[in-house]
Length: 181
Image 1 (cartoon, rainbow, N blue to C red):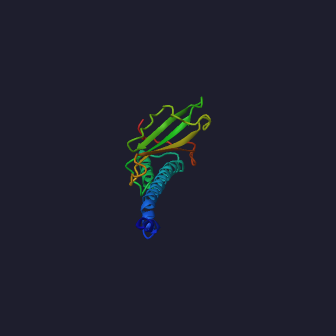
Image 2: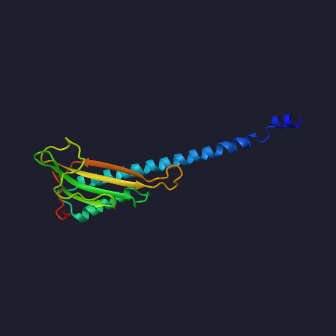
């Protein structure tokens, strides 16, 4: 008698359903929040490389090393409000020689994870067919190591890497006479 009455009683059913569904809904919400933050960070890092390459490509025929440092600083500012501790930027001028081999004219970096290309070296992983003989291009690389603040769904560091290639607009090449060799 008491057992059949207990089985028909539905007074606490919605509380039990909520207790079963709520953890899944909270986990789904946190996952979507982390995914959205990671996508925004990747977009900001990509935009940073684009902005750096665009600023150098719009410059006159020559830039100083200090000018390039300012451009790299602007690249870091584009990533805000995300932390810039994991951001590394590299800006380079690449010129194709007579054999269409892309050679580094100058290179400048900011951040711990990208190294400067040495002058005269062949630009690594350069797209074939991008340059004709004696043409130049500005190459901007970004590497952003992103740690999500929640670390619930994405517990590891995500590495976002992007490269942009832009041709100089106001001159055939952008020189940097005081950049390190």
